[in-house]
Length: 453
Ligand SMILES: O=P(O)(O)O[C@@H]1[C@@H](OP(=O)(O)O)[C@H](OP(=O)(O)O)[C@H](O)[C@H](OP(=O)(O)O)[C@H]1OP(=O)(O)O
Ligand SMILES: Nc1ncnc2c1ncn2[C@@H]1O[C@H](COP(=O)(O)OP(=O)(O)OP(=O)(O)O)[C@@H](O)[C@H]1O
Ligand SMILES: [Zn+2]
Image 1 (cartoon, rainbow, N blue to C red):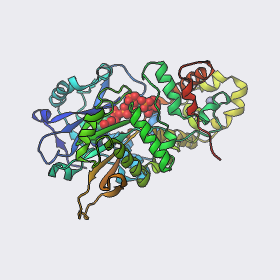
Image 2 (cartoon, helix red, strand yellow):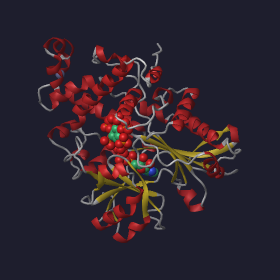
Image 3 (tube, rainbow, N blue to C red):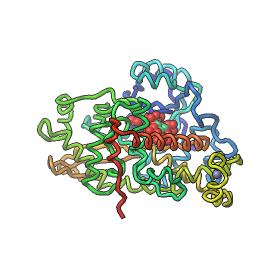
Image 4 (spheres, helix red, strand yellow):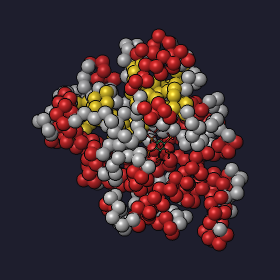
């Protein structure tokens, strides 16, 4: 058992808003207690509307999925189960050197209430509307702050970091994909989802980012992807300087609000990138591309994403067998098609169904996590650094870097049906758009990728 660290109501003023996603709010520490310097606190939110799968942790069927992980099953709460999931399932797959499962700390209600009040003015309105801090939860996770280096805080040296949410980096190849949905095999989920998001006014503009480029392993394509992320960051790209957001949208989601532009931005970069004004951001993007390429961290992420070998169109049938419910997908497809294509899936041993769904959920986590890479300029003669090193030719600078995955939460089994429905919706919206002549976003279809053999 790890030692329990507890926070007090009086600590609240030192914990400041860093960011948030759909389910957690993240606070950074600005005080001087050695226990917390260089750390962030990840606290749970409570949805105002009940989201699919957000109910009580581990129902009977979920226990079956994770039955080989006693640590998960015996977890007394959802947060501890999440921590065990990161440690026992995701870390071995992605490499524990890129993961920090964090330690649990006790947080009294007064602390959470106080923090909630303090950060309110920084939270995006739509996030406030969707969820509040869960003040009934008495635990939070203390994690390393991946946007800084411990030594840069101590010595007051600069550190620049980037957060990338790469999303799914491959095209599905499952034979269970219906003929009518064959487009999924040539256009990435990300690009198709963009059309739906635009249609639902979740975004104002189609992203230029193509996940296949970022995961390609080719330096040129990786750089193309990084430049696209910079041009249309949405919730896929952020830059932090000494832990403060300097580029990209706050609070996740897809709106891009707080932007530093032009010269102001070039100016703040001067402490880390030794280049002329106007060249600094470009150099930094080269540094990011070089590091993504050199580190190979995305190669492993891609392998984990590819655990989804059946696609949701296959996995959904295994899901219905696990929860012992009649398969609504087969029902809606009608006897004929269903009996041909999916009977095999419905007649496999239950351990195989469990494996299909378990792998699908693990892949879903890998498709939704983010990567944080931070850089500290290296001083000459500083050879004893424990960090990896990357060289930026355009500025003749050396950097220490570290790469960590964040947001490796387990996806709830309950979400399977929602995943199926969303997938259908994304494909039909995209197909619809393709059919519509002269649609303003027709151009986006040129993102279709040719599969090379
Ligand atoms: O389904 P997706 O691909 O839209 O992913 C969701 C994300 O949307 P986005 O990356 O903007 O498209 C979504 O992100 P945002 O809330 O849009 O920032 C969440 O990460 C969501 O996961 P969870 O509900 O927090 O467990 C994500 O849901 P999962 O599919 O990962 O369960
Ligand atoms: N260990 C960390 N170090 C630095 N920043 C972090 C860390 N963990 C989270 N953050 C910041 O806080 C934000 C929200 O965290 P996180 O993605 O874990 O929230 P979430 O609610 O689980 O997200 P999602 O909506 O994807 O499920 C991140 O986008 C990142 O900017
Ligand atoms: Zn079925």
